[in-house]
Length: 423
Image 1 (cartoon, rainbow, N blue to C red):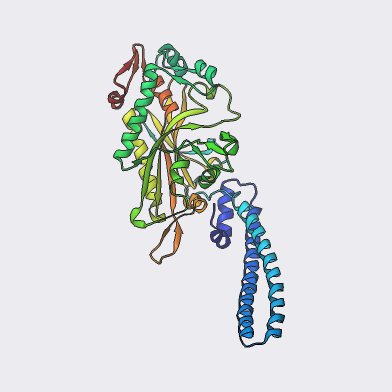
Image 2 (image 1 turned 90 degrees about the horizontal axis):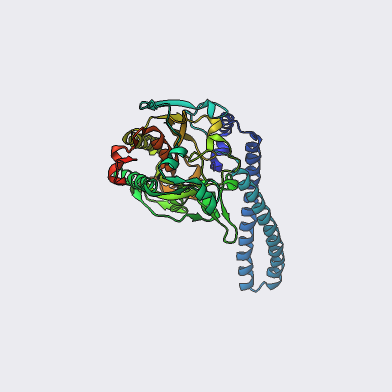
């Protein structure tokens, strides 16, 4: 959420940023500024009334002490009138504040200056590419057929138990999945990220804090009786560990990693492009998050990008990095880099990681702050990234590493899987 003072003092900058996002309601900024002015006027009037009531209370006390009962009684009637006015002002102020807060929740984050203009994913900017796309034989199979051939993943059994989008991993498929999770966690902790195990359900305040609510409410599974949400990403519980917290600068940066299953309704996702592991309702993911002083946040983002590059280099997968355009940027993000691996069997790029900085947008919602050198409370900056999401990594490994004799496991994973080939 954009800070109110920032909105008040940077109207033209905000409108320019929202234009890059193709935001359809720029008039909300004027509404917020006008309503904020009214709020401050109401607050000033209320403060005056409260000060007047305080002065009268002191004067009444003095009159009673000096025996001037009649005059004191007369002033008490005026005090009663002021209290009624004060109550009305307080109610009006609360009403304005509530509307103002609601309007602010509708404004997305401002894109970083490096974010390119664009309307959709077609306008994203490729900034890096690595690896060689393997040349597969004419008999190469997509991962869903390989999963069946080698008895690794059963999509029909998952549908029987739950429904489409909930696969069952079997035998070496399950061991490959577990090996990837352990490898990702080991890689992250070696880079300085502290491993955490967090709840898989969160309350509404947590979903609001990181911006999934109310923006993505329709994409989250909701447990109505308990008013809890299944997490679509570990970003929510990991970041909310520090909600309503004032951190000391000597404790920064905060670097965390965690493995969780993730749950997404993915309403409206149909077709061949979401077949097999390409789009699931439940999947495993290892996440990294950072909490930084504003001056260090962009450097931290670069470190996260380099870290994920090192993982994909270890896995020997061809990949590229995209800088998302304004029209494809998430609601809370200021700058996002998408990592995609190439699926040689499907002949298409598959997104496997998003790394984002949110500037102070999440921190404003979370009340996540630090004290600067002058002792003033300031919002911190938050960042997060997938490190990595497993389904499309598994899809890429199965498809790109297939040979007529079986599926070759990358060397880095052999200590984790206990086998070097799936035959």
